[in-house]
Image (cartoon, chains in turn green, purple, yellow, blue):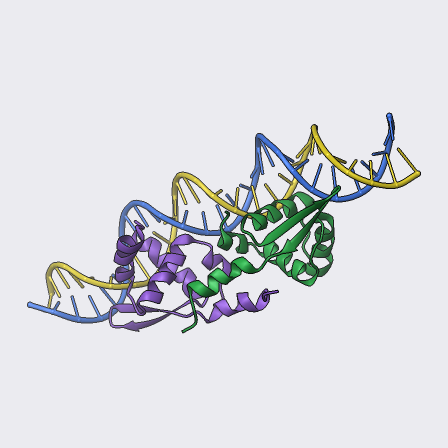
Length: 89
Length: 89
DNA sequence: ACTATATGCAAGTAGCGACTTGCCTGTCAA
DNA sequence: TTGACAGGCAAGTCGCTACTTGCATATAGT
């Protein structure tokens, strides 16, 4: 299991989570396009792919294959650890 | 304002937040001792001091001076941004 | 005043992480 | 089967960050 906090540390990865929150089940190429148009990010496909690996390792993204496509779904469950670790005073 | 997520990315900084949650208002030296005894971390004073600067920049730690002492208090308010940004499905 | 205590500043080092680059594998349509 | 499309693997580069090191400042006690 990867590090949840390090996964959140990168702004591009947070933008990916934002994108998946708006529209679940996107493919790698869809995410590349939408990150450019919606967030002004100009990253290569490989960079986004590596970010998705980190997010999946942290449990924030779940994937399902279908033919040559790989769909990515957001999972916010791991974020609960943060709120539980430092509860509000 | 520093980056909240990068502040959380380091395990030593998270241990500092844990320590402050257990006992608010610790000085730099107190934190050094308690990080060693409670968390098994062997960091130098300067390292902890730099971590505290990062946490303060992120708004997670507030400080108050009193003579030659500087007390550190936990502030969990910035963490709300995370829960609000990716609400549970 | 002198000393110990508590913290601050700044330059240098080493390792990790984001990104690129190039090539490879697998799937579908015509 | 051939070509286009979607994705994967791996090595290499570069910058950032955590940490150290050495010195400096400030406060309190005697």
